Image (cartoon, rainbow, N blue to C red; front, side, top):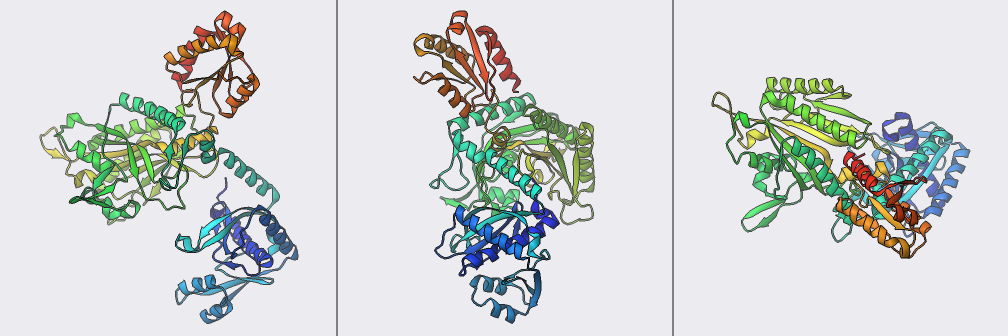
Length: 583
């Protein structure tokens, strides 16, 4: 989906579309007052004070009609400059515009744009005339606090989008509909995966039983892979003292993204935003030889970060998250080989999940900036060269972002293109020269001298929350056999004659560790089949006389009409293989 804000021509057009919207609203509601109307990623919006009038979908249709009338009139859009005094006088009856003017610096050039009978305070730029804004659509209306502050008045925000031709608009609207169908919040509610509640708080999702199964399967999957690679998994508290984060440096550089501290007895605690400080202490709990390294410490850790309420979104953007986190303690000579194993694990996971549209982003230091970055040229050059070498060896598509590394080391992000929407970052790997020094970590080298290890922070899934949201939207909730909350649904054709056999099949499947549901309700077969489709169960078994008498099963896959029959023992072998393959 195109990012309108980053497309210069579309950005100007949509900015003008916001003014067209405001003019139409002013025609229909003369007392309307306007706050701001910016261009955004997916179009434009305008925040409007309509007093007691509450807009609905029918009102948007009326506003669109008025906008089309204005377009036909074809007035030019004219820019003019005003002194501060002229601007204050012109907008004296509009407290929102007065507030904008008063917030401007004294030397700001104040401009406004006029189209026919409507003038709006604006920096611009705009198209030449309203007749250029032919192809537009108002999308929705919602509430928005004045200045984004919940203590202020609630305004009404109308969203819209504009294009230069009908084909592009139609394609964009089609993509929006596709995005709605894939919205993990909608699917998550329909399939009882997760919920939220105001009493718990924004950005604090509650995983329901179906969601808990999915999350546990993901945990088991990545745990098994990490175990084979020599990871040692730990559990650590989801709080730490303020002193812990002062030692790590997070208190000084990340405090605004953390929840407020809380005092208990004589100690001051904070909900942890990340797990590296805890893992540093675990490493430092023992004396290590160079022969012990690399040491890989992993954890499925619950973290808390303060996200603005407007940014919170389902499982994708949360304030309470579970990271698939690990910290790898290595010698400088081991950086390349250990980074290679991380990239290999990422590629292996993406292959299993069918993730094909991704690219790597390598954030490097600016070598000319001697103040921003940890001062060790040899270490930086060696580390960056090793990362490039590994990516080139794998043939990975990547781009370098000079000057965007963290202070303490270069970073790899994997940017994944989902089925709808902009790219998102799933996997990350960050080199860190600094944190081991802050915690005075060491290992004894081959000469018997103390050395400081280098740490790789890495997350393959990122967070289980965001990865689950991604998988929901990729599959539209039609999970593969191994991941679905219910893998197989069993329907006896007639309970009186087939329930006993169906129950035995269920028991055998459960003995093989397969999640099964037996639908023994006194409902018609067609109804049960349709409901299994609605619930997006991967496979449904239909058991009648033939299946019972021949010790067979007949199955139908989700969204397919073809039915396959096979012997029960062959089916057990077949299904176990399918689940093991994790296709």
